[in-house]
Image (cartoon, rainbow, N blue to C red; front, top):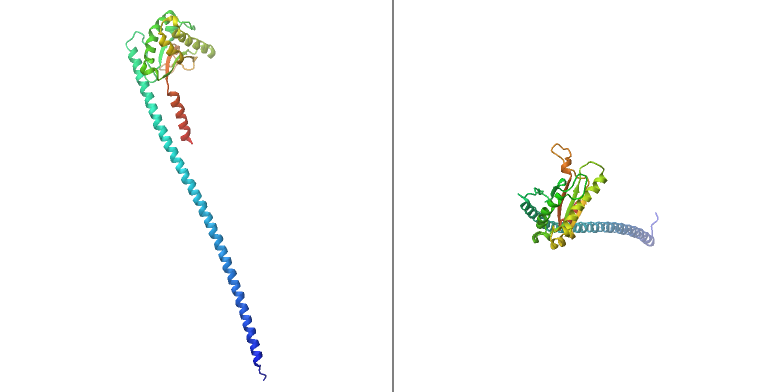
Length: 269
């Protein structure tokens, strides 16, 4: 039997340890690669999570800002509502007082005019003022207006009211006989006849001071048969439809209507 010498044993042992160390080095390399890959994946996942958190944080900030903006909008609308309400209350108070003053002026008078309790409008039967299908004032119409106008305008142009009155309107209305355009011209001419009589210096109906106050705010409109009067049976009352109306507008009404429209538009959004 042949025996290995010491050198052969040493060579075999060296070869064994070299193979073992290579294997361990390879395993270590694999382990390092696995660890590196795992760390890279963990880092990538961390960055994705961090990015997602930042995105959610940004969205949260945007939502918070929207809530703040909405709160500011609500506060501004609340302030606007309070301001609006003050104006509305003031206008309602002035209109109520003015209507009451007109009622007191004409109650029990021979003129027999009625004051609309809601608007303050006064309706005059056109038969008192004009002949059928005419627009020139009758003598009886002039007598009536000489009594009516100073009393009516005496109320609206009082110091306590005149600063609130932005417009005094004379409206002519007709019945539904004839064409719309014919009635439009007739109603306009009738309104102008009344306005002309109001402003005529030679008629001596109003004082010079009243004329100066009235000219900038007096308008005359013809409405043809666009706003007829109906009787209890729902039929057009031809006699009542032929009329002249005196109306007024208050100084802040236009602004309040515009502000209400703006606010309604804001709430709809």
